[in-house]
Length: 199
Image 1 (cartoon, rainbow, N blue to C red):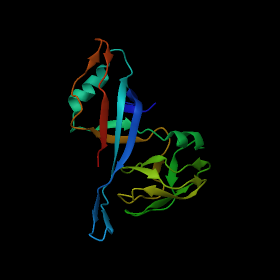
Image 2: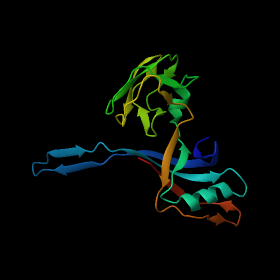
Image 3: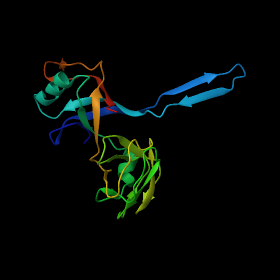
């Protein structure tokens, strides 16, 4: 179950439709000859849009989160893994980095692993909070590609979360209601909430 994560529990689960998108600034211009020029920045963040459903009758945990965190305080979410990834993944433990990798690397080495990690898996290293996505399949130990490039150096034996335990630090977008909206006096309905990865 994916959603807003607090004190070791999901306090409000995501509901469909759910959108996970990559926001990376790209500047495009066309010359008079119609030749296209594209310039892409290295900055990148994940953005999630989804409805949320509180997991308790009175929903006070979600209400407190919305009011006190607002657009400036960190909110943790349990990152939703792609459905195809969940079906193909064969993994019983966290991964470990097998060799140091420098910032801006687009791959890293995993060691001591038996199983299968499909491309499109969201991962997070234990030494920093950025969430990455694998860009290649990996059977057992070896090199695996990631997007975006590493933001910081990673050392040998750094652990890597890659299952349904990837926590992403986010901010509520500025248009999220700082309170609660009820339908029929009982059912909470905030509509779509947008979460921005804190980078």
